[in-house]
Image (cartoon, rainbow, N blue to C red; front, top):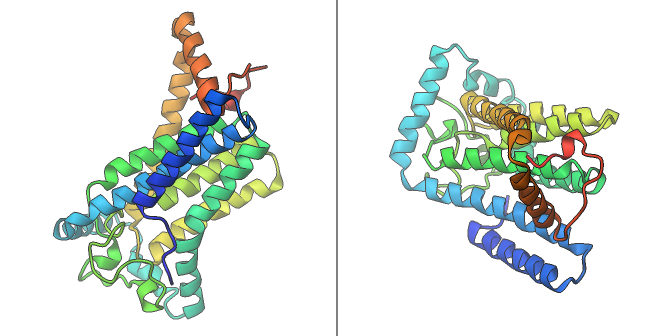
Length: 292
C-alpha cells in the first residue's frame, strides 16, 4: 500500500503558504468569503505537520522505545486488561476482516476527521471555533507525550503481537524499526481524534446520524489495538487527555466572567478577527459558540 501522506516538511510549507495567503487577503480586503476557509486550512494542515514531526523526532531511540513498550505491556498484565494477543486471535483466522482493519487504520484516521471538520465548519459555524480549539489542545497534548518514543506492540519482541499490516502487505511504514511515526504509540492520536468526532457530533446536532461518531470511535479503538499498532493503554491515555481538555475548557469558561471587562473586550475583538479574517459582531451568545 503506497504511503500518500505528506511529510512534515511538505505540510509545513503548505500551511505557511496558506497562512501567508490569509494575511494577504486580510490586509487587502480581498475575497472576504475565502478568508475563513484559508485560515482554517492553514491551522489544520499545521497540526498535521506537527503530528508528522512528532513521529519523525520519536524515531531516534528504538531500544529505549522498545523498553517503554514492554513496560506498558507488563503494566497492562498487572492490571488484568484484556490481552492484545487474545484480541488478535479472534481475527487472524479471517483474512478479509484483518485486511479491512488494516485499511480502516490507514484510511479512516485523517479522512474522517477532515470530512467532519468540513461539515462542522459549513453547518455549525458558531460552534466550530470552540471545537476546533478542543481539537488543537488535545492534539498538542498528544504530541508532547509522543516526543518520548514508545514502540507499538507489533515491534516489541517476545509478546507475540502480530503486525497484521505487514502480514498482508498493507503496511504504510518502512520495514525497519525506527522509521518516522512508528515509535509514537503513546498516546493514540487515532483514538483522541475519533473521540473528538463522537463527542462533538453528539453536542452540536440532533440528527440520527450523530451516532455514527460513536461507531467510529469504538471501531477506531478496536482497529488500533487489533492491528498491533497500539496498546490498550495508548487508547486510555488518549481518552483521559480528551476528558481533561474538555474539563479545562469548562473551567476556563466558568472563570471568564471574572476577567476584567477591558481585557475581555480586547481578547474577544482579537479572537473574532483572527478566527474569521474580518471583524465580526457576535449576536446572541450561544453555549457551543464560546471562545474556549
